[in-house]
Structure formats: C-alpha cells, structure tokens
Image 1 (cartoon, rainbow, N blue to C red):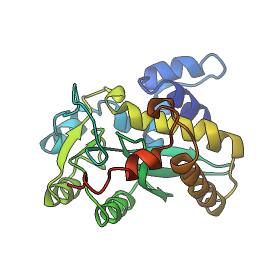
Image 2: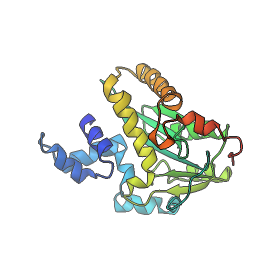
Image 3: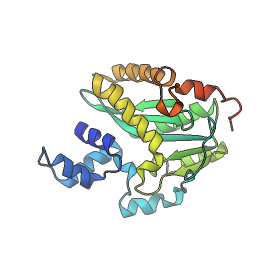
Image 4: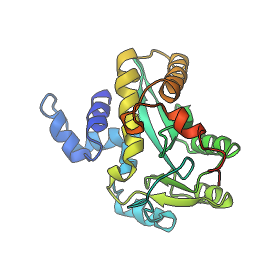
Length: 234
C-alpha cells in the first residue's frame, strides 16, 4: 500500500491499471488486488466508479465551477480532499480544507476510518469561523451524499466537483498532499496515531506560517490569508 501511495502521489491521474503496470516492474501483482487496495486507501474517489456506484451518486454530483475562474481573495474558493497517510504499522486518513488563493490550510482532521463523520466534523468546525463562496471536491462518496450537500447549501456555499477522472481539476489540493508527504510523512515514518497527530499538527503550523511559496512570491500562506480575510467572509 505504501508503494501505491508513492506512485499515486507522483502521478495523481494514474488509475489502477497504470499503477499495476508500474508495480509489475518489481512485483508480481494482479490488477484486481491493486484496485482493491486503492479502494481501501480511498484513492478510487478520484476516478470514475463502477457503473452502479456512479448511478447511485449521480443525483448529488455537481458541475465543476472553477474553470477560467479568477481567484483573487481569501475564502473565495476552498478545496477539500482526503488522502491516505502511512505509518510504520498501519495508516490513517487526512482530510484537509485549503484556501486556493493563499494556499492556507483552513482546517484538517485525521481519522483511522473512511467513515464520513470526520469530514463533516471538520467542515462544521471551519464554518463556525468563516465560510467560502465555493468549495471544490472530487466526486467521492464523502461528497456525493445528502448530508454533505445539505450542510454546504445551508451555509449558502456553492458546490463544485471535479470532472469524472479529472484529478487535476483539484490540482492545488493535490499539490499540498504531495508536499506534506515528501516534506514530512515519508521522512519521519511515524509509529503511532499519537505521533502522527503531533507531527501533522507541527507540520501544518510550519506550512502555514514558515514555509515560503513560489506562487506567493516567496511569502507564506498565513500572510495572504489573514491579510484580507475579514472582507472576504461569505
């Protein structure tokens, strides 16, 4: 699973067939096993699901609203997503909310399961402080359900979703996942959930307040986010 995670992190548009082909350079493995492992890791949320699943969630799928949109202020667009986080023994899932203008991590939550409760808890906590104009996600089951749709609509938030199989529609969120994994997760190899939580907390603070971004002219996210947040709250 850890090898799959690294391949996916470097190539977020790869489906299970391409990942299987890469793995076969070093392992004997079949596509069904790779597909099952990716589903367990939550990676399949990026790609088209089997036909029955697509039909079941179709009523909750929303159009992609960000194409050619000029993002000019904090809390105009938030990106949200879930990723697999490895430990030496076991793994957890990280849900993040990232402000697309500033790259600031608005909030995040770790869970040892893919039950949707941790996503809703994090969103509600973030909304208690401020709300964006638009939230963008993939078409995964955490976001194509009535509870998620109703929560956002009750706050007057416009809902945007990546196109089918278009992982790069959520590119800024995907870039953050790659950054945290190479800057922290793959280096430290945390042993326990407690260690992981402590490490994630420290990294998020560093990312928001210390780590410079080329896209921000060498500045840090917190300066771009809080510099104009008050006037940007929906």
